[in-house]
Length: 104
Image (cartoon, rainbow, N blue to C red; front, side, top):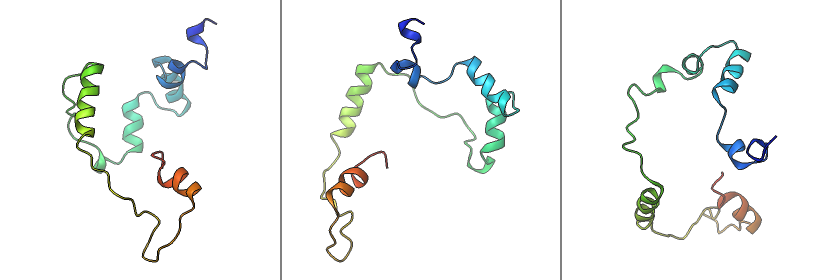
């Protein structure tokens, strides 16, 4: 196994499955295409009817500049999450690991 094929490499954990792995997964659940999987799992009423308009691909530096411009418009406000109407106290471990965690 060469360095690029090592399972702990970032690229191998985050790029996703290749066509052979996707086919094996689909076969395991008795389907032949991703479209078939989508048709059976996502209700038609919530599916988009047209293609998503994403525009032209940006180079990394263009995207970073665009995101920086958007982020500069953000305004920082005091957060009252957990304060309720009664002056309640939120332990810092809850505040830090739940309320301030973007994963939630």
